[in-house]
Image 1: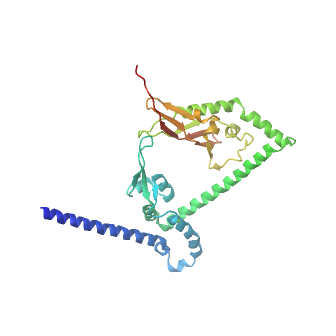
Image 2 (image 1 turned 60 degrees about the vertical axis):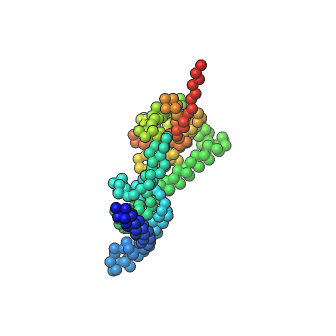
Length: 310
């Protein structure tokens, strides 16, 4: 029996070495295949010359996507879905490594190899499908960049008008609007209400990690939204970036709530922890329905308490 077990162990070791070599070989062949455009070219020879210019233009995007990371770099599940055009069902059969996790953090994050994600995405969409998605994403990013540049120029114009000497009529009007809009009781009450609701929505996930929070407020006018974001003179929201029907912006929590960091905390005495509102919040405003939403996250710290016995 001992001889049989020894022989089985030896066979298992040899099988493991063969599988390891095979995996390394497959990884090498995959890199070689991904870098060779001819492996993804399904056009007939008669059509290759006609589409050569288009293939050269789109090939750069594909190469950049494939070579953006090393093949052994790890990617979180959230980024895997976004960057590789995959769904949760697609990732269900992809091998992953659990990374992180623990008290106050939540469960480990599923991380996938860039190599496996590229292979899964190409298998699902094909090279042509991936290229189309990359082109569409590139157009969206260019459009977003253009909007951000226009908004930045509008912010600079607003700043110039506000800082101009008081002789100009525009500067005087801007100063008057700033003083009246930013100091209204409506805006002050709105800031206080937002902070109160944000704290009420803070809590814990089932895993024990801090819960992300989100609050929604109806009936907010453009002028009130502009004043809330520190640009009371921009009642037409020209300095904000609009994506679809929404204006979205990442904003400092201390500026939005107009308070110091000490007021952005909530104590959970029973759990012996304190949660702080994250330094940045996401603000979204829909002018057509006058809806304002603010969302954010929390950072958690353990607190120590001592009880004296007499």
